[in-house]
Image (cartoon, rainbow over all chains, first blue to last red; front, side, top):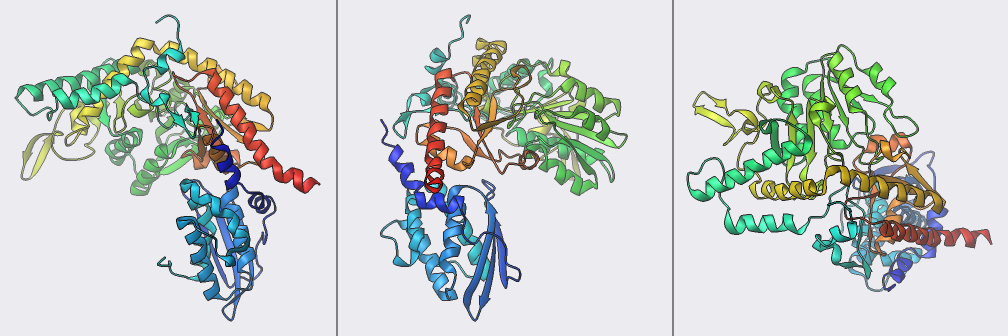
Length: 148
Length: 417
């Protein structure tokens, strides 16, 4: 009868809900070196990202936005993870995250809390929610699409 | 058809017999599109198996039969909306195309710089964007009437907006988000008092209300077949008698001409002037079966059923707690599209959770971003009902919403410790 219920329990993991309720790095930077914003036109979810990049390193980051638990928690976890990373590390992280959503499999250790979003792979219509903040990150840093 | 019984009606809809995610399908997304009865599906198959031919130009038997069947639906469509003349019915692809047709074929010739187009904040994008495009082409200006706290059109605000420069007033009959039924006759009088045309977006009213477009007083009425048991790909534009003849063509091509010469052409009469190229013959004919089905039920009976189930849903959602319903509470003034939001659970997350219980609702901006901004919500959930929905399905929805609240309540209880 309740075959389906564990599925969404798996999707809405507690760490996701925690980031949704208490987003990390919420707000704006006074003097961002890079910024970008993105909207998912299908559902109206929004993310605005501010970055401070010094010597190829993400020294500070902040975001604001509105939307579902998946888009907002994914962005919150992303900001926590990229702070202090070199740009090429960020690029690799994006690749690992996209691979987790698209191809499943064991999460890469570099993902940290982002591992909790692996349940999204089973809800194909929600993948675009999880990727919104990452699309904005890529745009903000001027990174090309990975070929994975 | 004295005793209306949705449980018996369900037997006519093959798609409703399935399970989704291990639960019986509860289909509550009827404002987006309705399901199709066996009779409509059969009509499509029957057409392709027995009748398929291009219409209006063949002499052979199948061509004549297809033409007669297609034109017969024009008459049924006129009857459904209370129009006296079937030659005032144009078949398009959907409501959106019907409104674009008017903005192009009538708007381009009749609007110029500084003229005004009056809309409301509760319009669907299909009744906003065609007018924005027209405004960009002509230099006309858009004006939007506000809504009140009940989600009803602010008629005083609308009256103030309509003035000597107003050329067209285009308003939704029944809101696809709020369910609000707008007072068409009053709005038409305001428009006509300044010589403006009044278009009524009937996408949500044609499926659900008994209609008499001529008594309503609008000049144009647009709707879609797929929201009223018919196939996708068929829309309708009705124009008050004489108006089509005053309009320029929309698309050029075969079927819409009278005589083609190298230097120019003359146009076909009546609706054919606006039906360029081979139309959607099969789906129009199957739409005829949908209109027959609704006629057999009776639109007044359909309306009574929807008032009943909408009242039941408004009551159940109200009693559930933590749920805000957007739109009028009086079922006499509204239809069966019920938008609501849950405290602290985003509509997309609600939709995913209830879908896992087999419940199909809509989550998002419902192609009404101006209205979402006015309501100050990023998105809403929407349950919308039709003839086959039962009160027990509302109960399934309300249970599933309670589940969503429990899932998202977990963090609260943890952080409270």
